[in-house]
Image (cartoon, rainbow, N blue to C red; front, side, top):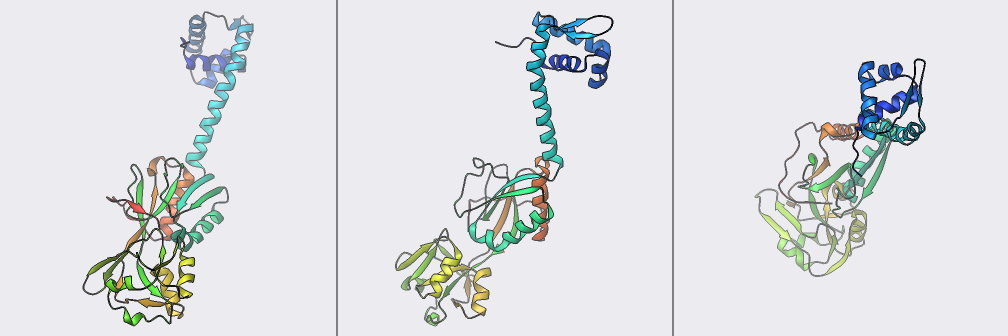
Length: 310
């Protein structure tokens, strides 16, 4: 049945019932005593019930009024608690942040940032989900998402953090000198690391580009860089590896570089989050913390293509 009374008038009634005084309730509500008295009368008229007994010395509840107060006061107490929780979300650095990140970039670039952030803000918790699969960030109720590529998520802000290049690598004893052009890569066994199924290469000097999609002699398919490099080091085939991971291993003689004049075009690691003005404080602090660690202060990126995880 449709309510035919004002919830705000009911709130006024609960204040009078709780304090046992029109005067104290009016002061608590910040309204004139006459206004409060008129609104209680209006509520009783709307309900066609008498809620309060009034005399010269005190205010008491009728039996019906007691029932209404017991049922209604819990509602307004709950609304008050909700309001306080929302206020804390907006203004206090505490609570949980749900974060999604790619496995490789997450472990390489973000791990230490996550740990340092938690050390600085002991009342904030991070719920981290690492995956190379594009999840539905709305359905999963994510607060912050990291993606590599060019992300497009409606109503989310995308901040560029770092450019990443991929290079082709092999076992140190592999005859890499025999591979002089990307069109020769198909003649060699390979290790495929998802989601990088297409090896996009560009010549460092002349800008020529070439896309290689391994299709023959694929010895292993993985979704994690460490397993990829272990397979390459075991001599199972060549692989397409982020340079931040491969170059130190090349310097130490653990890998050799195939086609040293070629590498991928830059792929950017982005951080995505909702409108800054309506974020809980814990998320705003996290966004600022990450941006500071990457030395980024520029405007949000406006992408136009779909992203992929790496």
